[in-house]
Image (cartoon, rainbow, N blue to C red; front, top):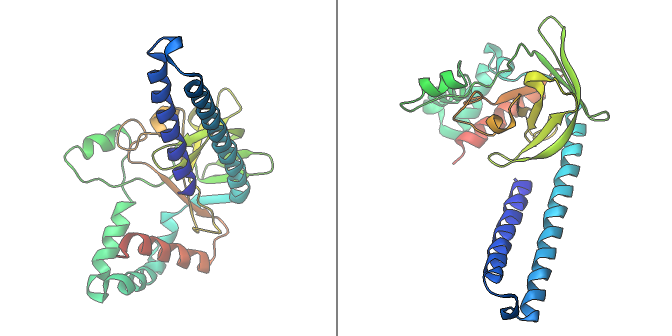
Length: 258
């Protein structure tokens, strides 16, 4: 969220500077005092430095994120919604909304992230309101692996067959949710050309969230297009009881705490 605020602030400064420059250029050159011209140049220079600094900072943060994500991940929800953790959910919900409301709260929370359609099918299904997100992996992906040292992202299917393995480079920030955008260095990467990664890690949020696909613009849309109502969620393949408990508690707290 801090990175998102910095980006928005930089955008606001750039917009303000643009309007100032348009105002100055509307008259003749002789009508602009030297001091005003110098001030405008100084403002532009300052904005450029600020924007450059933000880009550098985001790029460094993106590289750090890849390092922090190093490891392998499976789908989150089939793990933490397993029957064996139902009581954990109920206990956490009870602590936040009371015993009488715990079951209903759990059902509501789980329904929010277990939609079974996405893309244009979801847009049609939810045209009259409502809607739930599909949070699973797509395109036969079962295990997603990050190697921060080599900037490699790879994936296998349920049988262990390699679906893709590419190096990726940072290309920018997705403005809606503040995801870090990465693009494959290989020309023909298909639906694994772009990865948009949330700043979540096993160490801090106990799970990860991301999107991937072949169309960067479509990936920036959440309620229209081929990736509508889809946000993949993963958890480490090495997750233990503590990580699972913490993840459930975090999700309940974020969505139920008043």
